[in-house]
Structure formats: structure tokens, C-alpha cells
Length: 67
Image (cartoon, rainbow, N blue to C red; front, side, top):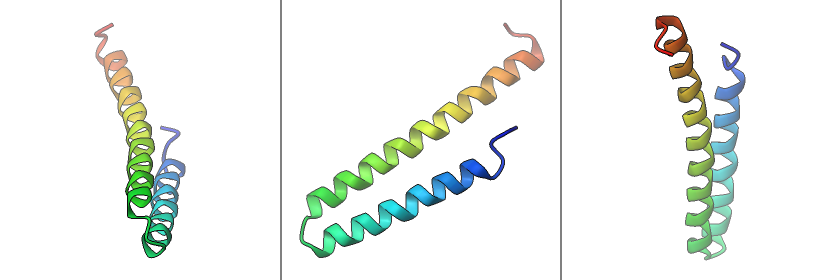
């Protein structure tokens, strides 16, 4: 698989950036914006994971000839 470490680092990087932005916005008193940033970060990571899982299922179908 070509996702080995790069995808893990991308997800971790997104998490760190979202956490920093969330903290800054919360300190500024804009908690609603902070929650939106967290939600958008979660959706981006969820989309990345969903595409990886979809690719995994396609490979499993190819191995067991379910196509």
C-alpha cells in the first residue's frame, strides 16, 4: 500500500493545525467558529479515511474475485 506513513502524518498534521486554530479561536472568545473549524477538520479527515477504506475494499474484491 502506498499510504504507509504519509497518510498518518497528514492526518496528524491536520489534527495539530485544527487543535491550534481551535485553541486560538476559543481564547479570542469565538467558540462557535472554533467548533466549526473542528467540525470541518473532522470531515476532511473522515473523507480521507473513507477513501482509504474504499480502496481497501476494492483490493479485497479484486483478491477474492467478487467483481
